[in-house]
Each structure stands twice: as structure tokens, then as C-alpha cells.
Length: 266
Ligand SMILES: C[S@@+](CC[C@H](N)C(=O)[O-])C[C@H]1O[C@@H](n2cnc3c(N)ncnc32)[C@H](O)[C@@H]1O
Image (cartoon, rainbow, N blue to C red; front, side, top):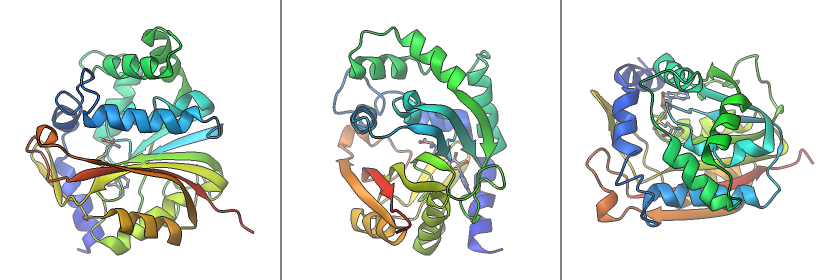
């Protein structure tokens, strides 16, 4: 078995509900604390999207997992939003939430928080309704394929990509991480936008019975990888995990947020 196959094998035990519980409730997602990691991530995404440059027809989220928070600012600026994951359990979790089935995760505090950041006084329920209407597909993805979304979305067809905690969490080594970044940015149009969030210096995380290995990356490694993938960095910010954000479900030391743009062909 090669190492990419070994990573795929390790994901067979991934439990979406345990993953959500580990990362997407307080203290990591405590909206009463501006210094919580979730407030930081949502602020970075909001500020980049509020600049008015990130817009177009198609927005694709790579490796969505069972989460939607990563799209709550960007989705407003696109006609068609596509969510993706490698695992059927995650795609099913998302589809159930989109169809308002009972027993799914409650994302309402996230919608409320993003509405507050936008400051328009809009009821969060309106944003949630619009989000459910805007996501048109939840499809399979494999970042290790040269066409990660197969024939559905070909090279140079997408205006914006979002991806959070996927590349480093699904790559066995830095070489695979680099290649995966090149594979996903390959579907971007020239000057298309990339909003990338990831873990710094992490070696593993837990999701129920699953213990997933992560390739540890530094700020310098991510910046160099983007440059090699012919992406120009517009913004790069980092967050250091404070002791209260360390909850025993991983060994992450920080988070990075990048807004980058794919270079022109010229
Ligand atoms: C750490 S989770 C990130 C989930 C979510 N984006 C978030 O922000 O929490 C990593 C995700 O990558 C997915 N994944 C695993 N192998 C993959 C592959 N080869 N290509 C794309 N995604 C993959 C997993 O199923 C999982 O949902």
C-alpha cells in the first residue's frame, strides 16, 4: 500500500459527529470570546470577502467535511456554490443539513456571528435560508488526482476555491501536500481566488475512533508551496493556539489563513 492509500485507509473510521464535537463547540467555537479560534477564522474570512474583489460565478469548497462555516462569508458573492468531500459519510451529513433533516449540527450561532460581523442588522435566518438555496451540489473530491473533481469541473473553470484543514490533513508528506495544492489550484481560472485555512505544526487529530496523521507545515512551507503553485499571496495571517484552545483532540500549535490569487497565464 502506498502512503496516499494508507491515508485514505485511515479515514475509514472518521466520525463526522465526533469531529464536529471536538472542534465546533466551545471553547474553540465560543462566540462570546473574541479570542476564540473560531471568531478569528470567521473574522479573517469576513474581512477578505468584504473587500469586494472575491466574486464570480462558481465557488468550490475542497474537503468540506461535515462543516459549512468556511463558506459563510464567501457564498454571498457567487451564483453557484459546490461543496465536496472524499468521504460519503461527510457528504451525507452535509446533504442532511441542507435538507433540514433532524439530528444535524446546529450552525445557527455561526450564522448569527457572521451577520454581526457584516453589521447590516440582517436576521441570521435569512442568511441560513439563502445559504441552503445557494449550495447546488455536494460531490466527491480527491485532492491527490490531477483533476480532483473529475470531469465535472475541469481545469481553469472555477472563480474561487475555499479549503480548510484539508491539504495537510490528507497528505502523507510535503511532496503530496505540494502536489495536492497544485491539483486543486489547477481548476481555478487565471486570477481566481483561493481562501485557504490550515493547521500549523500539527501531526495528528482525532475524529471518534479515527486518529488521522497530519503533515506538519510551517508558515514558510505554506508560502513557498503557494509560490510554486503559481499563486500570489494577497494576505497571510496566523493565530497561535492559546492554552484554553488546546482541548486534547490534536496537537495543533497554530492556524494560518491565506487569501491568494492564481497568476495569469502571461
Ligand atoms: C480535517 S477535515 C476538514 C473538514 C472541514 N473542511 C473543516 O474545516 O473542518 C479533512 C477533510 O478532508 C477529507 N479528505 C480525506 N481525504 C481526502 C482526499 N483525498 N481529498 C479530499 N478530501 C479528503 C476528509 O474526509 C475530511 O472531511
